[in-house]
Image (cartoon, rainbow, N blue to C red; front, side, top):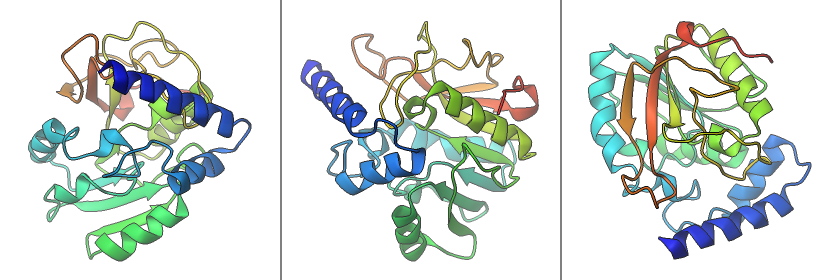
Length: 229
């Protein structure tokens, strides 16, 4: 784990140096084109591998059924590596990503009558209204200002639920450049989310691991404090 953490630190340093003053679309297109997160299975990074998503892939179908989810907006959908394994026959799925090439490839490979992919910058555009917005592993790569824009757009969409990444043991939310990484706790400032309806473990139980305390938290969007644009 120490080697993995060191490698991640080095990659973050390279990403920070490469993405100074780049807008979000340029930053994430650069990361995609250069496989900057350095994972062989998924260009969306190690967090999108089948191994890393084993827990949530087991539990998300139960969540969809329990909360009556018939429409889902997934941003960022990335390369759809793990979500492709989840049965979505009764769910209208919209995958959104800021990287044009990813969206084009996903639509060609996975598009269907109930599944489509759109290019969208959720920090600048209000997403479609759906039963559930899934936002896994996005805010951890965005500056705090852009995080708040994303959350504001989700709230404006009129959607019902938000399922998103939060690190429940994190004690401070620090700022970063687009595309770098740090954990965030959505119940801390500047987000101040209430207690989640549900938490799905999405990380490691070992405090020495980078993804210690990582979860997908479920909230009703109407319960989330308003955030500035």
